[in-house]
Length: 374
Image 1 (spheres, one colour):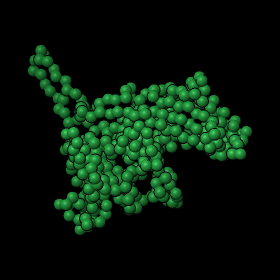
Image 2 (cartoon, one colour; image 1 turned 180 degrees about the horizontal axis):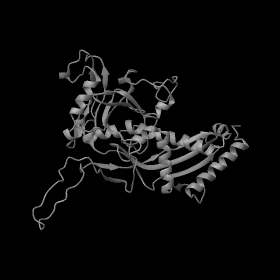
Image 3 (tube, one colour; image 1 turned 30 degrees about the horizontal axis):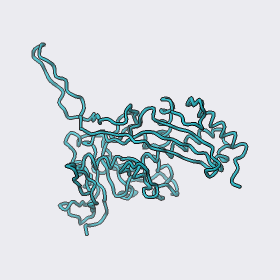
Image 4 (tube, one colour; image 1 turned 120 degrees about the vertical axis):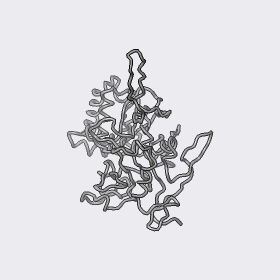
């Protein structure tokens, strides 16, 4: 016979069900699918942002529709004018930049389960419901970030074994740039199909070494590469003071990222971080790359560099990277399933999609490696 939930664990679980039911107005109980009210949706987003630091550096707005056009608030348009006579018509200009780029949201499942053994362990604590909510929020938040960096398609049926980083869950930010602004991507060949060119071809490695020849597209250090990437932006975007250089950890060493004195641990990124904290937070360096602040973020692909503005935690909508979700699309139900590995199963779904607000302000290089070109 399998593991049996203790009486204390059962009481804690019943209390969790009651709390979630009351908070969300789930009149039929949490064992039936229910929609999250707007306040509950916002609480869920806030909980993820509180526990996954990188989510504080991107925009996560709720939108009404499943599809729409990117507004593009960055602009170089001249909106100033004069009129010499009152009867001359005034000609307002759009205070933005319509870029003929679309966004589309896809239904995404964030289903989790926790074994009864863990529930029994947590039931000793009076804040059991809080601990549970935090655990789910971290799992969902980290998965959203992983898909944001690695997602290339939105498959009807995903395969986690074939795509362990969520490559088939949704179209993430890096893939968006490859598709929408191929001239802002280095390290990958372009492909033209149906009259549309994208940077989705085979790898075109970039080599960094002291004897590298810049004329061949190689660089003596990552600073030179960063400067070249920034030079590829439009002049008005290039001068932005909000840019940061997002790099993978394999491209920098500890002189760029002196870590807080914490012991190494087995972390979700294979033990490269100094603690589990690093897997959820953004790590900022005191040094710069290409004259811009250098940062490491969770799950960023190896051999990759992206330069774009990231937002400040206290300034809403200040990032160039966004994760849109459809308001009212969240569905949830929670079941106690003895037949499913003796566990609590939490079914969550939401319609969401990844957006780069201004591709003028985003450049990237991938397939970067140290050493001279063979």
